[in-house]
Picture 1 (cartoon, rainbow, N blue to C red):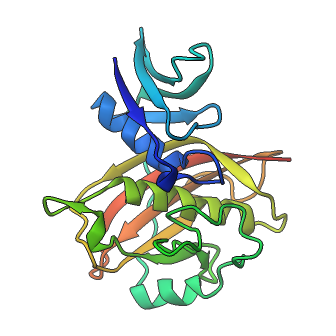
Picture 2: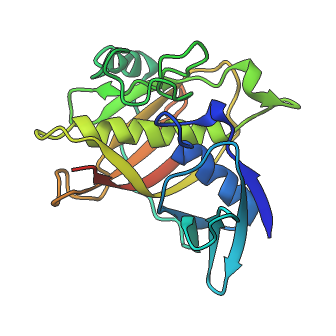
Length: 236
């Protein structure tokens, strides 16, 4: 058993931990290839226990151990592919980000919010059904020269969230309920990448309150650096 803690600086929606960041910390503690189910609100500034339960790992608050926050199970990575996007096209897509600072549902999110240090992962429509945004890890997010990869997990989560909520005819705010990420090459600080979100191999529209998404990160040569798969549920 080990413990992780989500600082306020890594919140998503105001007052709760960001799903991508928390999933990254959880997977790092596990040290195996897993997919993560997000099951309940992620508390901030709380020591959370990582506990192995026969065939899965659970993240729990020791003051309320019956409530599972995250649950991870082993899986064989399986990701959909999409065509690369240039940085210029990703930048143009970001100009179509669908919300402003006034109506953003998570304005303090380090990844997609509007705070001073925000990464501005403001995914907007490419015009071909996909969403995209540039991604750049700032120099302050490095430790001994290595980029904090939790930022990429956050960015992939957020880019898919904006795709899920705003790409279909029916616009609906949704939350992540399943997430998996694999990173294939080092992320270089202060370097631009193109982050693309789309439906992957899931149906393109809503299935009741459910919808799936995929994301890929491309370098300037069009090489795929990272991929994710996620599943979402609309709040209503």
